[in-house]
Length: 147
Image 1 (cartoon, rainbow, N blue to C red):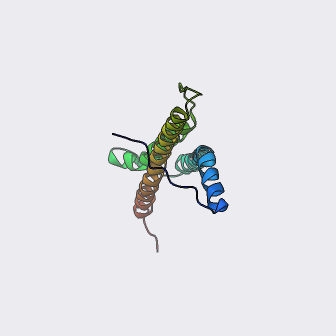
Image 2: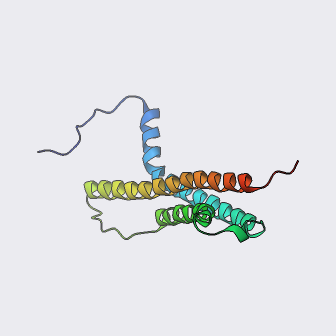
């Protein structure tokens, strides 16, 4: 069984050929740039949130599940940070430099792994916003209203 993709004749439009070349050439660096941005965002959010909790009046009431509500965003940001850092972590790949097929397979493997790690980082970041909303909602609903 032949697993090679069918050969598609060269299209006459050089713009789209060059566009495809750029997409392939820049895919790893684009993924890594997004991972770097996620690292910065997660770090900033954790710092702001930590200071907000440290200087708030919530500390005395943090026990049981309420503590979990306030700690969940931090945990999720840490998980997002871990996967973003793993996206940037280098790995040694064995490759036969004389084989274009081997080069293509390694490239696709690298892109797939980095993209997978990046998607997990994004997933935990999105979950952290839900957890942050729950913590803020709890905080605002727990404040006695004085009229």
